Each structure stands twice: as structure tokens, then as C-alpha cells.
Length: 406
Image (cartoon, rainbow, N blue to C red; front, side):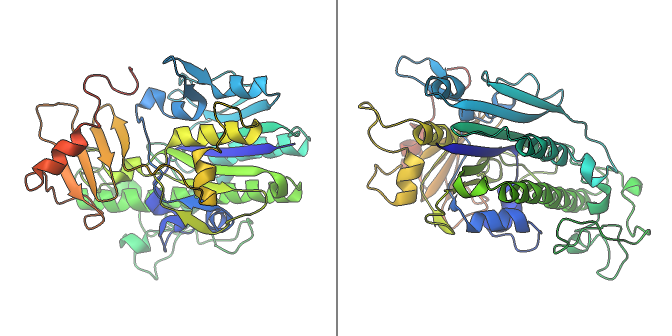
């Protein structure tokens, strides 16, 4: 009988992962998982409205315009659904379906926390206890929802200055306080007691360039700490024998901004790829197609469709496999030539293989156009030189309603 695990992050910058080309941030456990999976390079967020973040994972549109909960569909198929979720004041009110079992892990973010106090570590520890108790039966879905890197990001104390040398906050030879070592098999090691850079002496806003370097260094440290928690989870699944015959999907609802298009904490002029491009990897029990990549445009609703397909037999109305599985197998399928993302403050982005069209919320403001793949950082606006292409892509933007209010 089938089983599936989804590990989701509300916010995670894809460019800070080794699987997405980063070669200086330590993410060995996510990287290893990626080598056993199919990685979707063109997975983009659909709706980035904060109070609806992650909604598309759990609610499917129907022909009549209503929505059906993923849990209700699976329940009718005899599938038991369990969700472990980090919760704080910002996430507790977000819309969630009715799970057969919902375990909320109250978390609090604070500076100088120990590694085992990291919210992701607390979440994983609860899941491991549940797995060890033999709760993950056949024909079950386990959803593990992490907030990812919450703002402001406070990495564990042992990780804070891990990447200070990379951002020239200290000399390469300067002492650090971090205990992290990439090959320490998840065990702690000794460290120096002398910090070489004191964040308490920095006044935010005085030096914007320094703010960006500090923000990126701390963010990278937090990502490495999250990766360690992923390593503990995967290790537990291997020890219990569950990893071998379980579908595993790791994904994120949103990216994050770290000063790429505006000072840290300020609004960028358009909806950039750093927010919309997100992680999505699929590890099949058979390890079929492992270590391969797909360039198909996919979004969070495709994850939901894949889960329904995994647990339910084909029907006359839906005889073909889910789009994710079609892409993995290389089946003939209708090509998606564009994908649309929305943010309530930044507007829309319409992405194709050759261009990205960005329309602000204020329709009186001029749209922007960035040619791809030449302008991967989305800095050179060519809308004035490409009026026909602007007109062609503008039709994909909803004329009145936003995705969340429709």
C-alpha cells in the first residue's frame, strides 16, 4: 500500500541550496536527497499572499469554481492524513484543511538559541518520535510543514558566524564560535569561545551594503542549520526502513529577498525570481530517474495533483498520470509555455522560457520585461524595445481579481 511524505517550507531561498547551484553553503543532506530525486528547476510559486501561503498545496479547484480539500479527497480513498506543523502567531491562522491528525509544534524564534531549540529541529524531533512509535502505516500521507527561514532569521548560536569569512565580515583566519563541521555525522564538536565580529555593535541602516552582507551570512547559516534537521529526518527514515518504499516530495511555497533588487527589508520594484522560484524535488521509492532534472514549468497545485494520483487509481475523467509524473517519465504532454505568479504588494510575473513580464499592482505603473535566459538577474528592463511581446504576455494577467480573491 502506498505511502507519501511531503516536507514543505513556507519560505526558502532556492539559490542558497547546493542542489540549485550554490557551491559555498553547506547543505549536504538536502544535496544527497536531490541526487536520489528528480529536481524541477522551473518550479514557481503561484500565490504569495501571506495569509494564503501554502494554500495551493491543500486545496484543488473544481469544475464549478469551488475548492476541494486534498485531505477530503484522500479520506474518501481510505488514506490517513497526518500533518506536523510549526506554529507561531503569524502562521496559526493560515487556512488549513481538516487532517485526520494534526500536530502543531509551538515555536519561538530568539537569538543565541541552541541547535536543538531551532524550530525545524523541534519539528523533526516530534516527527521522529511519531515514526518510532510505529504511527506511519500503509496508505498514509505525512505532511511536515516548516516555516523555513522565518523573518528575522536567528540561526542557532553555534552557526551564527559560520559564513562571516565568505562575506568579509571577518578574516579567514579569525576565530569563530561555530561548532558546525560538514562531516561531523550530526554530532557536536568543540569550538572557540572568542567571537571575532559582534553583531550587537552594528546599527541597521547605517551601512546598507553591510546590512546585506550580514543578512546573507546569517541566512546562509540558518539554511545550513535547517539542512542538519533534514539530515536527522532522513536518517530516521532510513533506520526505520520507511525511506525505501515511500514517495518523498520536498518543496517550498516561496523564496525570499536578500537585497537583490532593493535594500534588505524594502520592497523591490517588481516580483522577482528570488521570491517566485522555489524548491521542488520528487524522490520515488524505486529511485527511478534519480539525480535527473526537469525544466517543465510546475507550481504547487501540481504537487497536490501528484499526491492524489499517487493514492488513487486512474478515473475515466482523469486517465493520465499527474503532470509531475508525466514530466518525470518523459511522457508526451501539452507543453506549458508560461507560468503566472502573484504577490499582493508586488503584482504579477508571467514567465516564459524567453522572457519575464512583470505587472505592478498599480496598473498605472509601467510593466517591466526581462529577456531570458540572458538577463537571469532581471535587471535590464526591455519593455520599451519589445512592445509586441509586452502586449502578448500582458493577457495572462487577470484583468480584475487577484488569485486569492477569485
